[in-house]
Length: 73
Image (cartoon, rainbow, N blue to C red):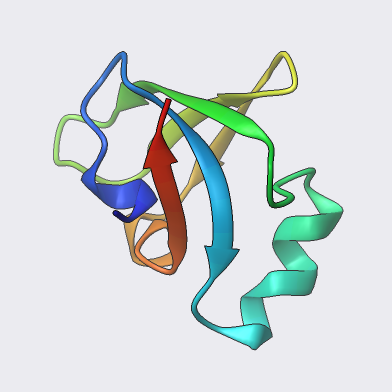
């Protein structure tokens, strides 16, 4: 499942990233494999989304969220 597929209120664990180009950028933001995330907000037009990770809200473009593989928790 991809992070972009979550519904508001769903929680998931980050498994991996599909693209190596984005991996380092997300690592720097605290999005590491094994971290739990929760989809908190979706903009009215569907993009961007906001996830709760490590106690803070991180805003992501939906296009980037499509490359983060997660499993529901």
